[in-house]
Image (cartoon, rainbow, N blue to C red; front, side, top):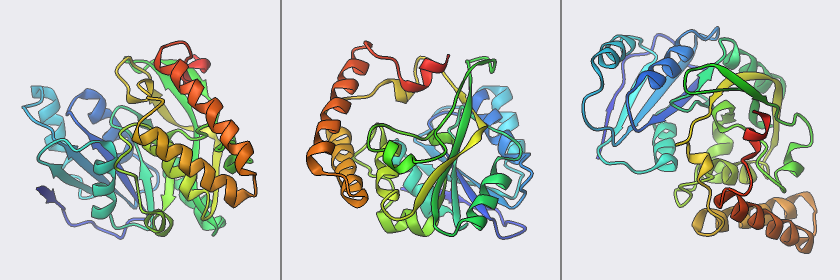
Length: 280
């Protein structure tokens, strides 16, 4: 069962930003506040409470109550936890803008992020997915490094590895709906699998400037990859689909997929660091 609250918005949003969370804490409050101060005011903020239970700390509860007075915020609730891809699909269904943005509940958006990204979509009609580089911050919000994403040739880079920071992306709604949204079988790496499908229907790229602060901590999902299972199988299949779209031979891509699988095995055994951690 999904319960939704939707205050009346003062204007039609240009970007709907989806923020799924499994807890209400200080990091979540900071993430939403970073959206409230965007220089592009015409956004809506879709918060998906994915099986959130219990009462938050007194200070967090007070701040959350205050934040919800913002008419741009809409709250959707899953009575039971359904996982990140399901929460994201629920958020997209509840949203109304033609551009769909993302922010994780423990990350921060730079004030001019969505103004700049929306301008790129206006400039490039074939653009379906746009991310950015990121600052890396620790649990206290202190910068510990940076992660530079590729700005050109991104579709071909995707054949080897993920080239986006999930928390930084904006997608065109019609393209996202055309490819079927997030694959709910992918409780891990659902972002990478989606980018592989989006790259088959339009242009994808990154802005070089860091438009998000990406929080690095021991419990983050991206550290817990699995080389085998539904998510990995879906990624290998979508990599083959993108290779076919780009005119790359199936044999070459299958060899690339084998190398990727070995890298995930090494990563799951802590023998290989995630790509973003190499910048810290």
